[in-house]
Length: 298
Picture 1 (cartoon, rainbow, N blue to C red):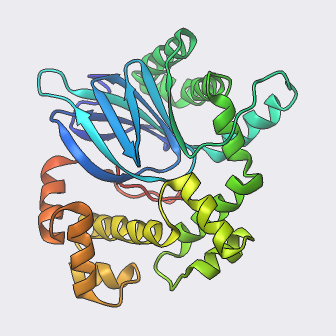
Picture 2 (picture 1 turned 120 degrees about the vertical axis):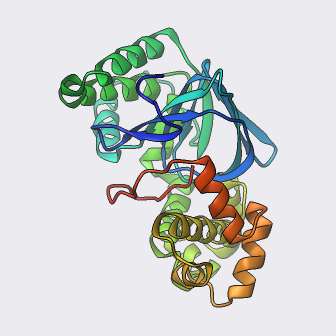
């Protein structure tokens, strides 16, 4: 992993949905919004805080995100012992193919869907990950064999201790699936006027029922979720496109620049200008891609 992630931040690979992460310094309570995906830490430790829940992901645990959930994150790392991790952005096509194949095995344990969970690494997953990292170290092998070994990692997670939760979430059935439809609507149309009634209609729920089920999945209200999505997107626009705060706030759907600035500082703890300067010093972010349903801010 040290060779695969030589620079701090994100290290891109020949596979669009695979990135290697390095952090040489600790980070404390940073607001993040992850794409659906899998984070496997090989060295160091991360902690996610969502409501009263704490999600540890370290060398003994991996993190699974089934729907984008805004939470705060801490990283334990140092120059002497950097945090090194693998990030697999969820390949929905691969996931659907595997779940279809697993439908032939009803003996697999079922579970309630969860938007995010951490789960212990087992020996077989660790072995699959090691083979994947060895292959990714050789460019030709990475391109030819990497997708096959990524499929193996997905299989280990889907059939692992909490794999039933991820399979249930990705099936998008029941109340969880209805909320997921509203979340996709938010991420596709965050820059447009949206209200609770429209989102409840997208989920085909009454407003009170939608409120209750949305909070169960995300630990926040629909309007708070929309606000956090807009703020994360504005931060990315300022960072990646050098937009001014005024231009970014208009692009993500804010009508008042002063309201945007107040809510941005309350959410991230810094003014827009200070936050972007801090991120440029702290992160090395890859260029945005178009292959993901959601846009993340890790």
